[in-house]
Image (tube, rainbow, N blue to C red; front, top):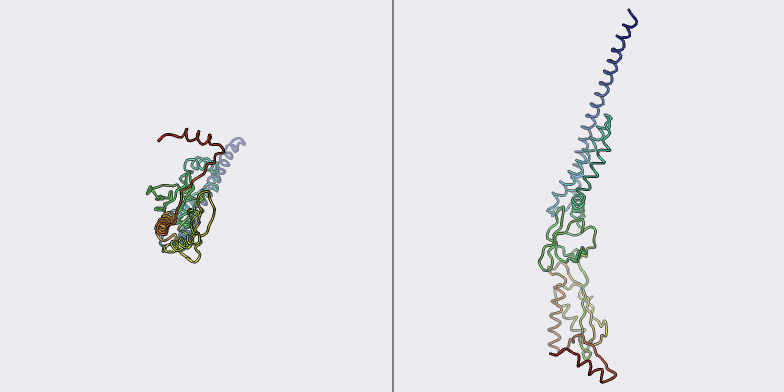
Length: 300
C-alpha cells in the first residue's frame, strides 16, 4: 500500500477514535453529574424536612404565625440546597458558574435587600418571641412610639399607639433600635413626682399617698411601695412615689399613673392639703426698678 494512502486512512481513524472517546467521557461526566444532582436533591429534601420538624417541635403552638415561619424556613433551606446541588453538577461537567452566580447574587441582593432583611428579621422576632402580640412596647425609631402590638408579620409589625393610630414598622427597624417593654415582664416599677405647700404636714402627706397608691389592684408588692420627700423646690415640697405595677393588667402605665394622680388630688382636697403651682420671686434693690418693670408689663 502506498505510504501516503495509509497515512490518509490512519489519520481520520485516529481523529474519530479521539472524538468518540471524548464524547463518551463527556457523556459519562454528564451522567455522573445528573446522578449527583438527584442524590443531592434527595438530601436537600431530607434536610429541609428535618429543619421543619425541629421548628414545629420547638415553636409555640399558640403562635398563629408558626405555619408561615416553618414554611418559609423550609422553602429557603430547600432552595438554597437545590441551587448548591446544581452548582456541584455544573462544576463536574466543567462549567464554571460561580462568576455568573456572583453577578446575579450581587444585583439581586441590591434589589431585594430591604425585603429579604425584613423577612429574616420577621423570622427572628416570631421565633425568638422577645415580644409578642398585645405586648406594650416603646420603640425608639425616628421618634418614640408607645403602644400595643396588634400584628406581627414576616415583613412588618403593627403597633397601636395611645392616640389609637396604627404605626407600621419594618421588622428590620425593630431588631436595630432600642425597645422598652412594659408587659413582657411580670412586674415593672413606676414613679411620679408632685408638690405640696411648705405649710403641709409631710408625714401625713406620705401616709395618705401611700394609702392611695396601694388602694389600686394593679399595684403589686404593696409592702414595697415607697413615698418620700425628694426635693425642696422654690415654691413647694416635692414628693416622689414608687410602686410595683402589673403590666398585664390591661392598662397602659400612663393611664395607671393618671388614675393614681387623680385620686391623690381628690384626697388632698378632702384633707385641705395645697398643691401650689410653680412660682418664682423677683427681689428689687431699688424701687425705681420695680416701677419700670410694672410700667413695661403688657396692659390687660
